[in-house]
Amino acid sequence: MSTSQHLDIPDFVIRTQHQLPCTSRPELFHIPEDGRTDRGSIRAEREARAKQLCGQCPIQAACRDWGRSSRESGIWGGETEDERAAAGFRREKLPGEDKPDCGSEAGAKWHRRYGTGRPCEACAVAETEAARRRRNIREAEARTQWPPKLTPVELRVLEQIVRWGRPNNQIAKSLGVKTKSVTTTVYRLRTKLRTDNAGFARAAHELGLLATPDAYRPAA
Image (cartoon, rainbow, N blue to C red; front, top):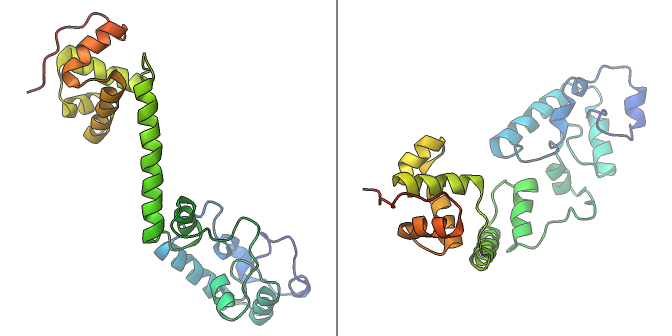
């Protein structure tokens, strides 16, 4: 186990006269800081490469015993944290690191950070519901705010609809974005302006959001 990421260097590591294989790739022995990319096959490959280095180490057994007795995180002596836990040497987690209850948005985030990378069904449903509630709150605020505040992108989309009657796919091409993004922007405009596409020209003119616009021409 590389000691460059661990402040408490074991005595047996200090005393050894051997060049430890793990010092060549210390990053393989701990989960990356963000954790988002260390999932599935990527994590399995990282752990396999770390274990391969451990297999070349003359103090592998001592390193494994240290990892167990100290309840360490990461890979020690070719043994992962999960493998140590299965052997009866589970690490005591730090405050706030314990897994939240399943069926919560926090649980979904935990799955992605510490688990398999994919939330369980209950956590996935809770995460979707939380996102829906936040969206409803934003839409409610948009409906009650008058005059509405439009973003630069919303103003550009509105102008293209009002002045030239362009459909969403043409607007997307001119702005260099996906059509789905424009469709979402149009939906927000309907909510903020409290009208449908046919009322965009009138609403924009009344609010002074645009100079006097040409008559709205619906897209074919």
